[in-house]
Length: 115
Figure 1: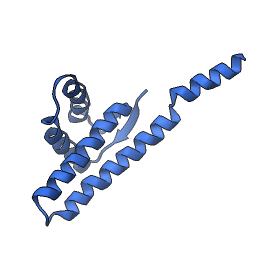
Figure 2 (figure 1 turned 90 degrees about the horizontal axis):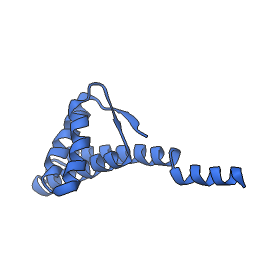
Figure 3 (figure 1 turned 90 degrees about the vertical axis):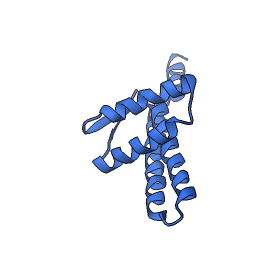
Figure 4 (figure 1 turned 45 degrees about the horizontal axis):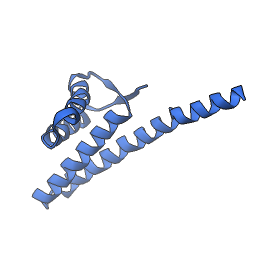
C-alpha cells in the first residue's frame, strides 16, 4: 500500500537536497532501498506514492539536513525550522497512513470473524 503525497516545487527541492545530503551516510542495501524513494521523488510530477518506509527515509533525511544546517550556520534558524517542521508533517502523514493500513489490526479482525 502506498500513500499519495503532493509536494510543492519548493518542498520537492527541500526533500531532494536533504535526501542527497543524507544519502552519503548510507551504504549497501540501506542505500539501495533509500535510492528507490529518492528516484521516485526526483522523477515525480505533481505527486508521489510512498510506502511507510519511504516516508521514514524522507523524514530522516529532512531531520539530518536540518541538524547539519543548524550545526554549520547558526544564523539560518528559519531555514532549519522549515526542514524540521516539514519532517514533522511527513511523519504525521506516515503515522496516519500506518494507523489506517495496520496489517495487524486487519489480521485480528479476520481471525475474529472466523471464530
